[in-house]
Length: 156
Image 1 (tube, helix red, strand yellow):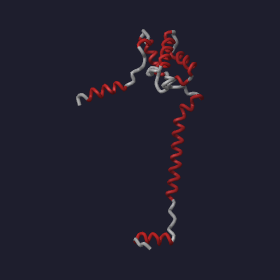
Image 2 (cartoon, rainbow, N blue to C red):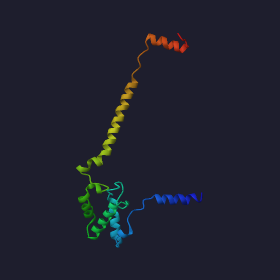
Image 3 (cartoon, rainbow, N blue to C red):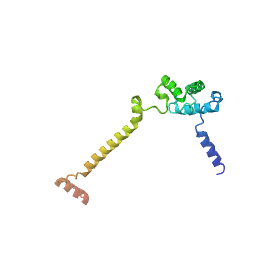
């Protein structure tokens, strides 16, 4: 047990996202580097698509990290850096795209799918309930005779 705990902790630490920012990309000014890191967490890696550029090892993510740092060193505000990248790559580069007509499907799609699924499930439930509420038709005289014969184990 004493050996298992350190091993489990080591595995957990290894599984945690390490961040892909290389030391040669980092800015010498800690305040500017902090800004670059915060911006990097808000920008999507266009190769990985589900990671920020700060977490991705892709070459394009590295290029985007370098561009972010160059723009920050040039004196651009955070908004200006984002706008610069959006102009080149579109809203897709943002991990949280703005709410506007072009992104309505992205923002509202999950809710619309949920509403549709609930409506479909409700319809199916109501139909099954209505079908189950109907009493079965009574047995005909022939069906009743055959049932009685089966229950008596009469082979005739």
